[in-house]
Amino acid sequence: MKIAFVTDDGKTVSAHFGRAAYFLVVDVEDGRETGREMREKMGHTHFNAAEHTHEEHTTQPHGFDPQSQSRHTSMLEAIADCSVVVCGGMGQGAVFSIRESGKDLRLTSEQSIDRALELFLEGKLDNQAELSH
Image (cartoon, rainbow, N blue to C red; front, side, top):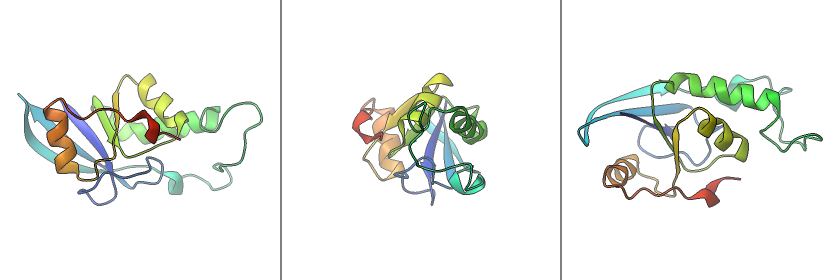
């Protein structure tokens, strides 16, 4: 199994999916970590500023319009081989995109990737839905 932690530094879980620069992908076999790999993550800075605003969308909530869903899909391409995504927070549109991709999403207030991994492996890393916005 591969777990993708959204991060800027490889040590802490990012509080914002769209703004983070990397995924730290942790390989797990038989309940133990077997490897780590930093992968670049597309984020808001990779898209034309004119294409991405946080203004109100008249027809759909923020993050659910076709352009946003396309951006989320692009962000997830780097972790197509991962079954779990761990992040500190994200918008509802990103939550929808990740779940639609079939990945297990865990939003957590735990900042340490090492501790979040430990909790996940113990079955104690609960999804904190209130961290979506």
